[in-house]
Length: 330
Image 1 (cartoon, rainbow, N blue to C red):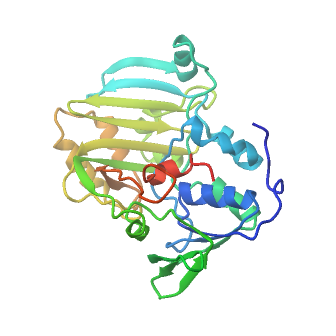
Image 2: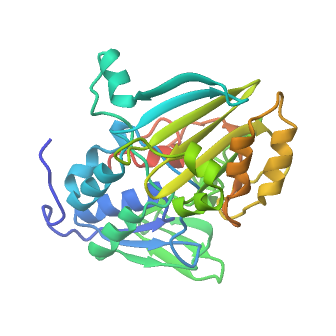
Image 3: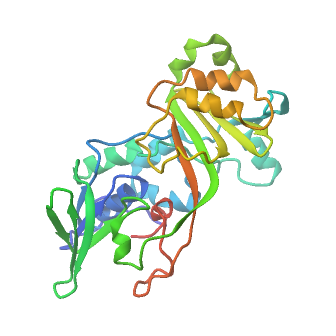
């Protein structure tokens, strides 16, 4: 498919309103702008929120990058095409020694250059592209309701100070609890899976607090990133060592303190206490990694099942969740 960058399409009279600056919201805003539409974006937070850790996109969700050279360049810079993997038991005993991802793909007769990519939950490269494209983002705008005016062919939303926004097209990318669901078939039912994830990402220099941790979680020669997995009874942990960031994730039974909110953080001690209650004795090196994690970094995110329901009067057969919005053609 031929690349058609910004400016390839003539301006239209279509006014688009996007709620949310997550992956789906900014992707939709950029593509609508590229197609010549007028775009405004509302965000509930006072600024771009980079809480969370990493987000992986499949190839179908990145094809549109060819139309945005800046995004494509940055994505290639942070992708894991040169990553290594190691696997340990939860007690620190190594199971699989370091292997390069591209070599594993080659053995499986797959393209070694098609490893997954990685970026922040609120990708700054998307935000930068939106600014460069002249997309207006209004912060501190919490959407509390949506409306439709079929007689005028308009839709819109209401924010928490009762201000009303109106547009020809409204894209509700403000999360799984979006009030827009009232207009498109009802609230998606969330059922607990009984599991949750402790997860954090922080600047690599925090590893300097503990030389032993820094040595264990070092990168491969040439500053090549390493993904390490720790497999324990009924659970697992994963870490990612990059040149600029350290990431760790641990799966655990739901405790009741988890919340589907990237802005709410917990203390490292809560995680350490939880690890001590996991089956088996976990290696000290992983616990020390948790211990040196800086404050206001760790989130305890629940894992839910959600029943997708059919839209009765829309073209799409099912309601997409936010992680799929980036793969939908605008």
